[in-house]
Length: 417
Image (cartoon, rainbow, N blue to C red; front, side, top):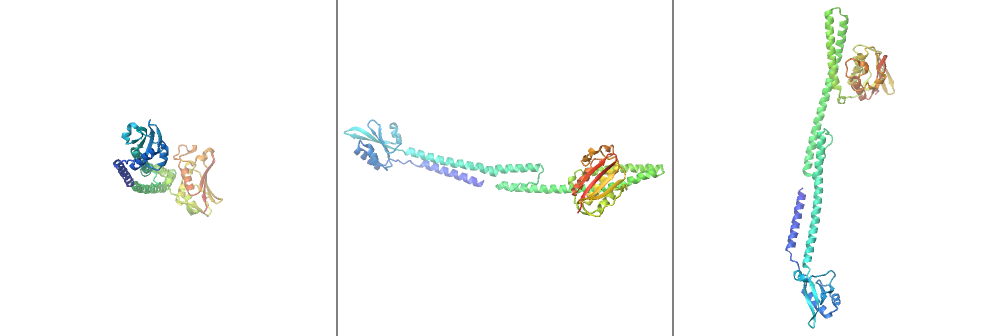
């Protein structure tokens, strides 16, 4: 900007000085006396052959024309010359008569073009300055576009991105003076906001994982308490104890419902969960299934020794969701089979309840979906969705199959290490 101001002031000073010099200059009379006397002498000597005189006088700077007695032009020193007799005194033209025996034979008119030369000089300078200032204005427009308009547009776009929460795109360093410093400060602000946002997301993720872990740890003991209380309520002979055990069953059911709701709300946003598959011995898969089966319904649990890629903590959640669904909707014995499918270890978990309709199988792993056999049983439709998500995050896959009124089976594929 300082450079632009300097150039503009310099141009105005040059233009002012040039204009002052033009106005102060005195136009020079181009009629030279020596040449005029020579022209008069030559024309009179060769008269009436004025053309011969003109040819003899080539190279003179004085402009003139020769007329006859009636005022008709006979010849001129160069083409394009003319004069107006009425205003000769204004133009400072003057004429010399050619006399012969006292009679007017013709006239030599000397043209004073000092004013036209001055006018042409002013016009040339005006055109030069017009072009110079036009180029300066064009340069100004381009300069403002590059250093003012474009940076403002970029900063507006960048501000819109930040307002929308997009903090990953940097503003970039601008080469425009004060906008450059401003964009750098703006980018530093963006980085601080991005850092704060990531810290907040990490804190929120950790909080959710802690809540999910605690709710999971609480759920299994309460389920065990409920099972024991149900058994005692059926076997005790004391009516008072039976009522107390039934009260325990009701309260643990309420606790289980609240824990399930809490766990569902925490795990609803699964993208916040971290799944870290690692090389795991197959015995951990067996332990997770036995931990989830607090009612001891699993039969035939004999897993082959191998190494699989799994997240131990997350697979416990997978097993818990599958087994708890079996308890809720079938409440039968559970058959678990293992076999190898290429490079995968397959885990088939089958119960023998009512199953689901064939057309519902593909929807069982969708969020909030519940089959028609769910009836009035408590549930959120998140169990199989969470299980499938976690298995896929470990690099495996999950599939549900069923024969209605006969059996329901969940198959999990885990990649062997």
